[in-house]
Image (cartoon, rainbow, N blue to C red; front, side, top):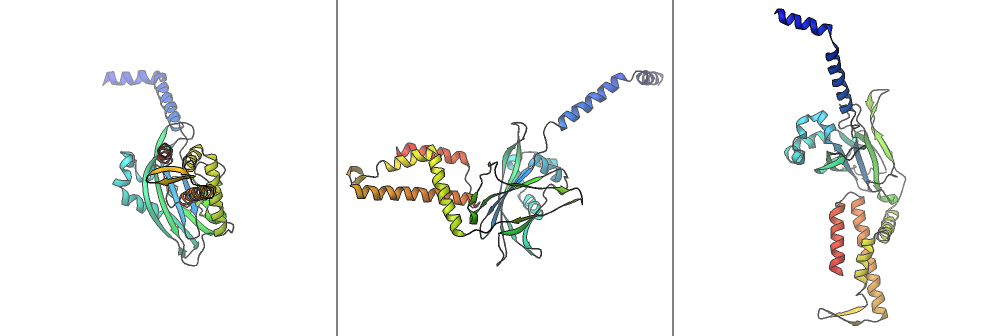
Length: 304
């Protein structure tokens, strides 16, 4: 007991080692906490006359602050392990409506895990990607509606969700997910009244024809600007003037035959490409870029 008291008195007389340890610890904690800014959520909207397709990208480190850190264990299987819990959570924190008493039908189409990137580095983090569809009641328009969304934010006050209208069919507006020119609208805590306000969206009037013609124009520009697309089109056009007989190319088919074949191939290629862009723009069917690029390269080789 005497030795313990003596040691205690000696340490109290010389507090420098303890102060150094404490300061070092605080410095390390502050550096770790400031290592990366908190990743934010992304909300992409794909507006069509009948519905609004929605894609959510929610960082798993932020979602773990609400649902518990255990969801970060084996994140690649999270959507299989906790499918029901995740669906219930998401549907309770997102809603759309034109009139307060007439909520839209919001349905989760699919969920998957992906990796995002911290803004200040190349260090990745896991994120939950959720595809939803919001369908208004009969007689209500998708041109003006309110989006109520507070996932993660309802408990994490410094979390922000950035909303982008990726495509609007009726005005022919299409912004890829990586487009920096697209308008970004934040949803966050309002510190003046301590609440999260819903986002009111009002879109200018358009038409079906504007949307269709814009998609065709976009498809033509996309073909013109893509070297792989032009190579594929050229390989299709090269044998167009030739006659095909018994599984072999024969002679020249004539000017009229050649022009007709060229026109059909170019038109079919442009319309097919435009329809593919349309399905992606409306959020109906989105294909990952890398597999498509590999398939295009393979198709060019096969056609050649």
